[in-house]
Image 1: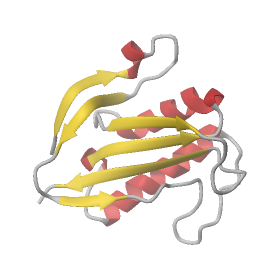
Image 2: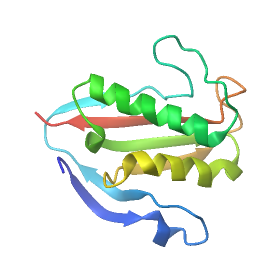
Image 3: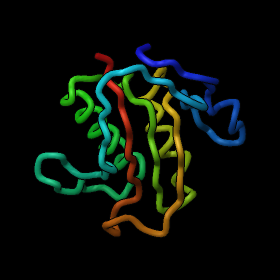
Image 4: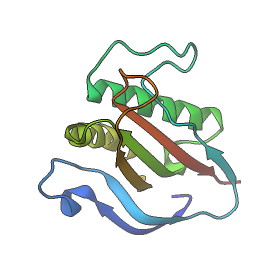
Length: 138
């Protein structure tokens, strides 16, 4: 692992009442490297900004996380360099589905995470938006 992850945990223990399996931590310490600040990613294609044709939070989250992975890779890194995510959802009932799906992409990574329920996103059909920060070692 490129960074020091402090107080790693899995949401199975933290939120036993929810069906979650996310590897997270309380803090990440980075040393040098190149910081990649990602714009909040939404369920749309990076090349043409076309929305995916789905109103399902799972499908939307897959697209969002695929975009995050693609952008980090285009910057010369990999998902293991992801240090922070901020998750915005428009309905608290989407939380488990969104976090389970996100967890598939961050297994073993342990970024820090903040989650918010918001009234709306920039487009009414978007249910989830995730922004992130990655630090790619030198």
